Every structure is written in C-alpha cells, then in structure tokens.
Figure 1 (tube, helix red, strand yellow):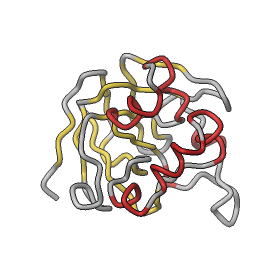
Figure 2: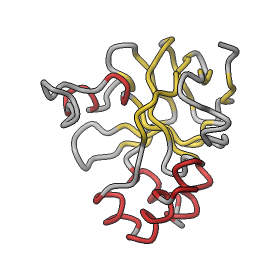
Figure 3: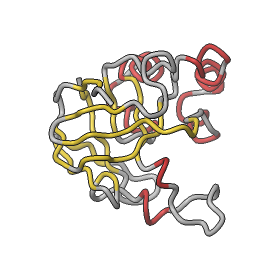
Length: 160
C-alpha cells in the first residue's frame, strides 16, 4: 500500500500529497528531481535511474517516530512493501494506482542529510550490510507507465 506521497518543490521543502501524477520525463510532477540534477552524471543532469526514491513505510516509522517527520527522509513514495533485494531486485516493476515504476540498480543509501535528520545510528542501521540487502533506506526507481497515484493505493509487483 502507498502510505505517503511527498513532493519536493524546492530544496529542503516538502509537500505531502493525497495524490500525485507520475510522468515519464519528470518523475513526480512538481518535484524538483529533474531541475536539481545530479553530481553523479557527467553533465550534472538528473539521473534517469534515480527519478524516484521509494522507502518502506515501516522503516521510516521506526526511525522518524512521528509521521510528521517522514517527509524529512527526502523520498517521494513510502510503501508498505518488502523492498529487499530478494523481493524487488533491479528490474522489478511495481504497479501503483494508474502508474508503473521500475526499481533501478543505483543503491539508495543514507547520507549526511539523513544522518542530520534521523541521527548517525539511523545511517549505520540502513547502511549496514544487512540494511543494504534489505534496502532499509529504500530503492531508486523510474516511471515506466505514467499515471495518477493516490495515498492508500495498493502496490503490487508486476509480471515482467
């Protein structure tokens, strides 16, 4: 189930949505992913393999304690789904509402901002060997089929 949708219109800004539109070119419409770009691409453009960040709702609930703090994680989609490598390896497609997203290979790890918001122990936890295998920090994804997603939409794995 899709538990929370968060748009990041500007750096350090968060807008919690009841519904959002996922777009092939821009990811979550209204999010700054494309405009922000990436230090990891040669030309500084946004990495299409990191269009969306998806985190397990139970993990952020454990780390944030208060649901009002979930959005600080910086992810756009929070799902109640096992995001472990064994359950959703890169290439796995997930249907959410009208949209389909695909889990991509780049790892999604805890960083300095995540540490500042949730503490260094949280980063050690999600970046541990087991934490990485379980994708406790979440996964990166890209939009495969555009469409509207709504809070509480079911999230299901697609047959590829």
